[in-house]
Image 1 (cartoon, rainbow over the protein chains, first blue to last red):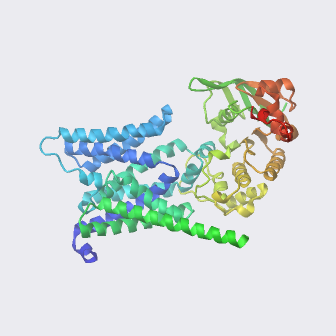
Image 2 (image 1 turned 60 degrees about the horizontal axis):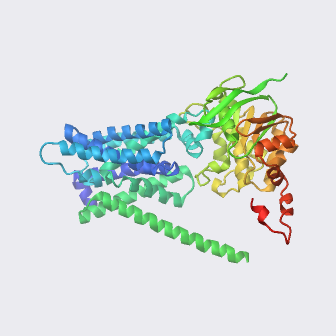
Image 3 (image 1 turned 135 degrees about the horizontal axis):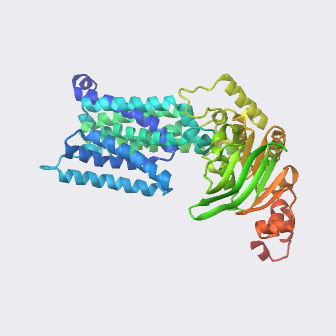
Length: 280
Length: 262
């Protein structure tokens, strides 16, 4: 496969796309887990399916539709949650299924044969185009830039939003900004693992990094590295046995997370036992 | 007459249709040490949050040093109930205290200066946990965590310090240290303390407010039976809280324990 990367444009694109996806899910995944926004991310991702359908219906690039829909979903969920005090899981659930339903409706309204949507649902990293890559590069850059730019404010906001707001940090703005960043990340990840599997790539590398370190910055860096390993391993397996890249990447990530968890907990147990016996 | 730190005029706060506090009028003078007691659900935290500007007043006004609560944020330090925070968050003690040094608004590419770090160490020393500066917060005991939150509030350089049950789930030694610290801090700043802890009320505070949906009492820190009845509806509750061994007397050997379950 290493030789093939130099030979085939589509493999190069796939490789770059994996790296970009890893960067985004490494940074945002850590934040999403700490802020308990995993379901929110899932909701935003699934709502974007409506945009994919609209893209097919109106004849523009479906990923642009996904981008618009996920931004609207992020702002909509955030606004309703903030204004009405409705429990966010209810709003998320409604957006989640509304987005999927709209996607199905738009595709059904299309004249002629329906397109194959499985590449958006389950990801198809080997069919990433140059245009997709440009969009992914710019979104990744925006996500990194915004996080680095306000890193200390983010840290205060994530740890204790109430206190941050009391000392005058614009937490409402950060709230919406975070949701928009999640929407952008989702769009970056859709081509790689697909709408349905986005949550796994947002959580698995970050959660594995959480087992390894308890420093926020290091956690993000580890998570980026782990994500790259998962994506490239998944890409390679998917290339060799020719199945959907998203599924393979997710399976690799989850297996890795579970093994890290098992190793870690047995290590802790052995260590605890040793301390306990030495204290006797 | 000294300056007014907090001026509350006929304040009512509603959650939806339900009133949390109604018709509260309260003035806190600069330099005062006000204790607020009351039963659970009596609106103590709500009152603090109204002073902080976290929840809007449904009726009435709150002024902090002559401004609306939102405008005076750099003057106010806040120590939240620590049960409300995520103790697994990946952050060190020093980093938490440093968040108190963040500027208002949004600071782009913000780096903490040497002075910020020195100040943070000084505040940690003041609360007595400077040796824990590089610990993860998940490794702290309840008392240490609470002291860290006080250090963070002090890092704002406040004139007014608000504390919400700073001694809940804290060991006895830490509790005494926290009260000593507050008495010391009161020399330079106004303190408003919400507590269940009757011991604190008797010893140190200069004024007392009793809150049970409305302001039952405001004045010198002396409670009489009438106030306590209005506040808790049952005087035994008060005695049980402050002097635990009084409760034990009812459970002497050989007696039925039924009474204890009321």
